[in-house]
Image (cartoon, rainbow, N blue to C red):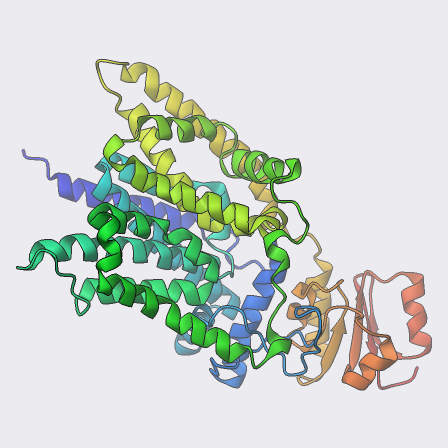
Length: 492
């Protein structure tokens, strides 16, 4: 009986994808109140506004009317100009089209779907340059790292950006390598080729999601230099590709500049805390985040081994992924230290070298070491790696303040749909999102001024006796140990 290797390969890949999908359904129906719920709430609010007010993609809006995002301007229209709303159109579009699940559920499903596509691109990229086992193990780690499981089911655009980056690299490789083989004139690069157009579309989408995608285009530069050497400057097709890649992003930035109140401040992300290259920077990024949170300490062994045993022919190509990640971590220093979700784009780079190192342990050269020694090492490292990483990541799923859910449901029930609410949560919009109302997430101005700005209701969490004193001025609509709701237009 002949064994069909191709069918086995497809079966294993499908099994990995299915298991990865099922794991990402953990707490699928949980509210947007888990780790990094602030950014998730802002993202989902844009989608929810699309479902309620129409798909005006050139004027995306969310619920926050404050000056907190921009740091300067009040935002009475609730504009939200960050990433071009590809993610939000899909999240809201599937909700409107199919009518099942919630808006939040579709946000999670969109992220899960793109994460699975990313794993397929990673598989294809590694298989093309390495071997089948390394490709399968790279996919395995990308799908099953506890850190990546959590973030690839959150309502964030970053996992989608990763998909577009990997897709752009894969199809760009096909374009500049396969296209030259198939044309009579070996030096020709065709810009009307489907592979060119696909790579271009993925690259454009990656930049529109987040300009940080530019840091992860180093593998494409390596492919160009590998193929053409220094003569790549003479290839006008490459210049056309580069220009067309950034043109839509430039137009989007030019358009959004008309709405400064809807543009969050971002310069602080680079080195706003002056932490770059300080001891704290290396501690938080490489020891705490990558070493403990992502690799669970024990994964460092497999990762380093991947460097040591990577095929010399393709080492520089795979190293370009790591170099991309290092440049990104260094340039966007404060953002990466402050927010763990900023490490989402570096996961493919980590998974690649974990995959290469694992393939060596599972199938080592017979003349060097026995499988009976390396396979137990692999099993122990992976077991402890996943266990210790999960020990830290599991808390990310928790709802740390259930009161925002209870209070949000009360506000939604007890106030008019068009009411504007002051849901004080120190600027965090997670609470405001739960109310399903537009408004403010902090006392950015004295209360009388905020009433003049349009605030109709005030809701405070876990009220203290001094909070209830406000009831002497404004009528208390409802009060429990979780919240107190005031009508700012009525006296007690």
